[in-house]
Every structure is written in C-alpha cells, then in structure tokens.
Image (cartoon, rainbow, N blue to C red; front, side):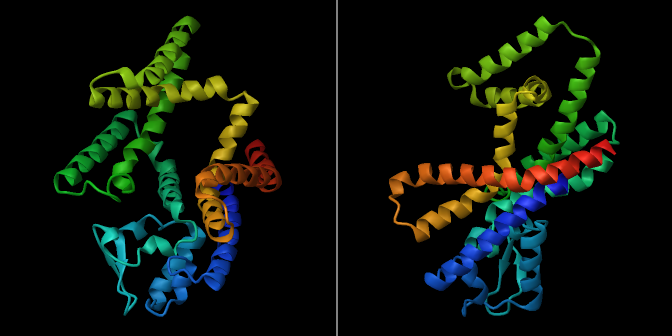
Length: 295
C-alpha cells in the first residue's frame, strides 16, 4: 500500500526530470546535471553506472550515495565520511536529489512488519541505542552532513517514535479520559508552539517540544482527519516535496524570471503541478489502494 503511494508520483517526476535534464544538457551543457553521465572528465564503470541507474529508479540506496565518492578515472566508488570533499558530488547523478529521504523512509517500511511485533520496552531500548550512537558519532567528529540527519541508524529513533506515539494514543483512548482533559492537552501543546520562541533554556524546550509532539501527534491527526481542506493540504505535501527542485531548476535555466520572484513563482507552480498529479494520478491509484483494504 505504501509503495503505491510513493512510487507512481516519484516515477512521474523522474520522467519529467529526465526530460528536463536531457534538454538542459543539450541546450546549456551543465556538468552538474545529467550531462555528467556523458561528461568526458568522468568515467563510469559498469558497476557505478548500474548503481546510479537502479537507485534513480527504485529509490533505495540513494541515502548511501551521500557516503560515497567516485574515482573519476576508474569509476570506482569508495566510502567517505564527507562527500563534500570530492568532486563531482554523487547526488548530481540523481534526477531527484531530495529522494534520499524517501530511501530512509522505505528502509523503515521494510523493517516495520518486524518492529511492530516488539514489545514497547524493546523499542525503547532500540531508540536509546540510536541516540547513544548519535552521541558517539558526534564525539568522534561526525557532527556534520550527512551524519547529522541522513544516517539511518541514528534516524531510527524518530521513526520508532511513531510506533510509540500510536501505542500511547491507543492506551489513552482505551482509558476513556475526560474530553476536557484531552482539550487541556491540546491547549497546552499549541501554547507551547506559539510561545516557544519566548521560552528560555533552548535544549530543554527543544527536547520538551520533541517529546510532546511524539505523544500529541496521533491525537492531532485524530482531531483533524475529517477536515477535508486539512487532508487535501496534507496530500499535497509529498508531490510538492518531490517536484519543487525540478520546478526551481526549470525556472532558473529556461525562463527569464527575476530571482526576487523565483520562490513565489516556484511555489505556485509546484502546488499547481501537485494538484494535477493528485487529480489524474493519485486519485485513481488511491481507489486501488482502498479496494485492497476493503478486501
């Protein structure tokens, strides 16, 4: 079900991106675009070519690219702790470079069927180990991109917090807690967000907001799930995210638009493109997804 949600939209943008990159390579010959595949200064051996080709298609593995460099003479890939030290950066081989985050997401979805069978205490243990690993990496100097927010073992704590949040929600729901008390929870949480900037002690308030969000997220979803405009905006988030780089690049290279208006125009076009994708691609696929659930 999750694959039906992610891949059709991704492949549509991938095809559009490929058309754009080929056009850009033909008209402008930019070595930071897909022309890098045929750039005379970069040699790709069979393995590196197939790796880039497959990761572009199946998404999985795009996060690993951020820990790799390439020997431009032999095409051999090698591990590095800082991809920024080498040229060309391997994310330039990705048609949708921001899809590295989808690779993390898909990795978690592959683990979910096993993780949800764990008791809460074991999930909390794994979350603790994930946090400890982050502290260890920071201690040894891995406190920079990509280690700070792209390394799956240290990001696992955030994914697992979703399972914990759901279990907290079901537990509280089963206790039939007074609605006024639930309302107090909502009011306190939204007050924390509104007045966050005025609260001292940055580290304490940051962790306080993070932990409170873990607990409150299922309740907020439950509160807003039947609001059509809220759900519509939520549905737009993925296609906007996956298409906005392409829109920005197209406007930059193929239109004379003033840079001052680039953000506004790119936002509008990304939203309109996403609405079209939802209407003509996602809605028919959603019917298939819902039929699967009904069966």
